[in-house]
Amino acid sequence: MSAGAAASGGTDEGAERGGFYEALGGIDGLRRLTESFYVVVRADPLLAPVFAHFTPTHVEHVAVWMSEVFGGPAGYTAELGGHPGLIRNHLGLSITEEQRARWAELMIATATKELPDDELLQQRFAEYIEWGTRIARSVSQPGVEPGNPGPVPQWGWDGLKKA
Figure 1 (spheres, rainbow, N blue to C red):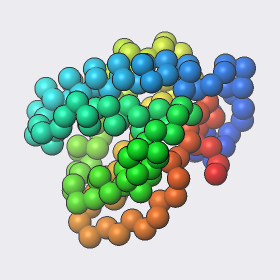
Figure 2 (tube, rainbow, N blue to C red; figure 1 turned 120 degrees about the vertical axis):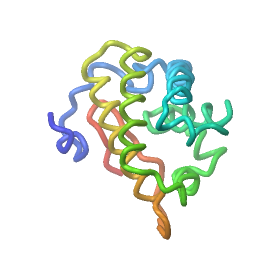
Figure 3 (cartoon, one colour; figure 1 turned 90 degrees about the horizontal axis):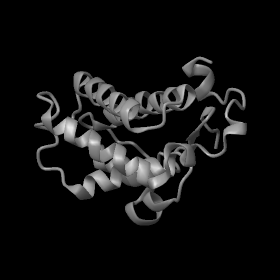
Figure 4 (cartoon, rainbow, N blue to C red; figure 1 turned 180 degrees about the horizontal axis):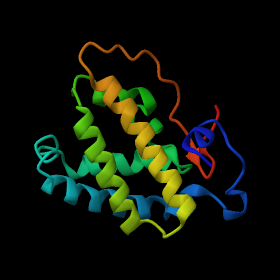
């Protein structure tokens, strides 16, 4: 299925597989992923300067965000401001396309090492990363007024779930 079909709802390819969040390894799998990812990011010449002052708390927040996106507990909404909070965190960062693409590339590469070796899981995860980083880049540009982005997007075996 194409990314476009996945984003529009697609078919129920993952119904027999159980929950996407559980297949990712739950919060422990997402923490392992984000911790490994930020080790790579901090060593990357393009991204290291952007993340030089980020803390273990930031790494945890990324894991909690992804947990909610992929069907886990709604901790980002409950504790960190939900989707509007995430958008606010990106305002004014002026993320370049080169930085966005590199971040996505490194996250997807780290996922292939840290997440289960399941083709559909890896594909859906990569589709979310590409989709989400494009939004983050868009709202990071100077003068953007994002408005209300709505609730945290939900992503699973079929891609973006309709609200």
